[in-house]
Length: 217
Image (cartoon, rainbow, N blue to C red; front, side):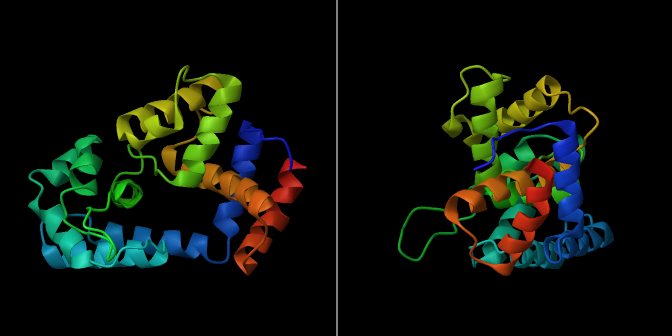
């Protein structure tokens, strides 16, 4: 497995790989178009349309999109939270929706999906959380110590996650990147290392491996 490394050059190249991906780049563009067209969250049909598109194109495994949309519209001043980049925008919608797995009575924590929903509305303020990137940030931190004492579980708190991303950007001198480019580059690099460890399972995996291998090797 190639050594885990992150530089401005690698991150820029990985972000560029995302922009050329035959599926993920188009999905990202489609979501941005619909959110730009209906940016507000004061009408249930508008929210439902956006939730449906983001869930489908990001293949998020939950099914009760109506309950989630109703939950979003129930959050007082949600659009103000989004505009201000307030953590409450994520924290207020990730729980309290009542959505459960069929095999459990416990409510699902829609943490990652909530960061995606907020990020597409205000990409300058909300980095996207997902497990692959959280694992990558944790491993990088163990080497570079940009957030001393940080544990993987700490990143389940969104404020801590964003602080860790900001600390990594500062420590590794990646300050020219906004969260959206960071999200894309970090995800591509994290996905590459995951596939390299677990093996190629899809055509998308193979395409990504071929592209990123030229960057990191």
